[in-house]
Length: 612
Image (cartoon, rainbow, N blue to C red; front, side):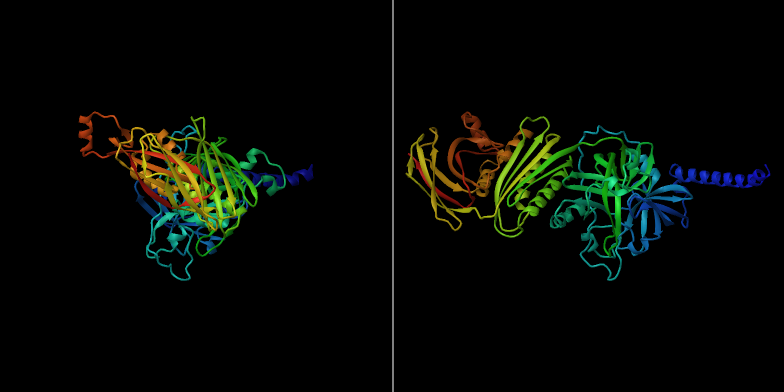
């Protein structure tokens, strides 16, 4: 009993220690719920911030308040802070820190989100947490199957001068903006790393100007990281999430054989709601993106852009808001993504299966990036190549897919062939007639290491006069590259209502010249007035391997917005012929024959023929 009595004071001391520890732990756990209003903040206050520098461990850095920038943008305030602590002393502001929560007296004040271009110190702008909450948490969540809408959001441009030699430039801006004058210091959103895997480095470099325009800093990284491979053991779904304030979070754009994700930092968690970034991603308003945790391998310190080298980890929810003050997501919800397959047939046969976001701004660019990377990964970079490209897009509400197909010849790995296919796809997504919901994208690319080109040398006809309703034989002489010339015979049927005594123009041409003739002779047909006309136009664009033989026939009547009116009463015809309204022109009929060939054709030849 005496021994136990001696131990009693020690027992009380131990219990007291644990009670203090538990109390302090509760303070740390619930610190994010304690918010400091911007009116309570004064210069000189010191605190700390949270972010991930390595792995998934949330670490702290030091913060000192420099001042408040009130109404720096319309109805928006900014808290100006100086950050310090390893590794910020060497790196400056790091791309991927966007959203890092900042605390004073264990009370949350906001998210690190902005920085001064060309600053030598880690001086940042903090978006107040109350502005983030009021903007992101008080907006009703839309239906999750609504496609993203795009808003143009461009960073400011600067004169093309070099920054001060020897200065460390923080990761605030694109490479183009870093070329600007250091005298034009401006508060700009911290760049968000766009971590891309499975994409050729040369392609990523070509896409960089586009991504930089939207505040993204593309870097090559890894694809999804299995939690098991990092921890060596299985974890439950709740353990995988771990999206606490200061943790790394990723917005998924592409997942599968190719992947792309934008990495930032979690600012605030309330129930199932997550706030992050502190500035917009694309500022689309309503969004629909997979939300994932992320793993940081290391901080890549650079004179121009220090960046977190990271990879998306596990999808844990959905990002549904993308606004000026940040992004908002919800745990446990799923996002809609579009299945995409790219098949490359050439020296190697490869198939890429992945899912991509449904966004009329980014989807075409991401498909273009994936396709170009697939080709460069399997084919030689230099040398003559003939390329056949077929894009099939399944649109919601339409039984048959929209098919865009063409063949090209290129001497080096240019963007032109793929651009020619992706651009009509972009027209469909951004049409003015109706919203488009894409269900599937299939792209087939066939590459032949040979030059399959030919030139249209000449044409001849079997007679210089033709009767209405008669047949005209047109022989087109085609000269293949390094090959012997040959004739392609095309039979043209002249309509019976062709005006006697009129002069006909017979033309043999390639797709480019033919498309120009289409626009010149019937421009209204190529200015769609509804969605179905747009689809018809896109699917029937002239193909480069098609020989076109065209006979232009003058007709009695007028055209209005591309539609022909050959049977108008004389009185109306005379009125419309002198009308001062746009879209009205003379009526021409045209007989067109299209003959597929095995060559990419170039050139055009014409000959006149009269009607008896």
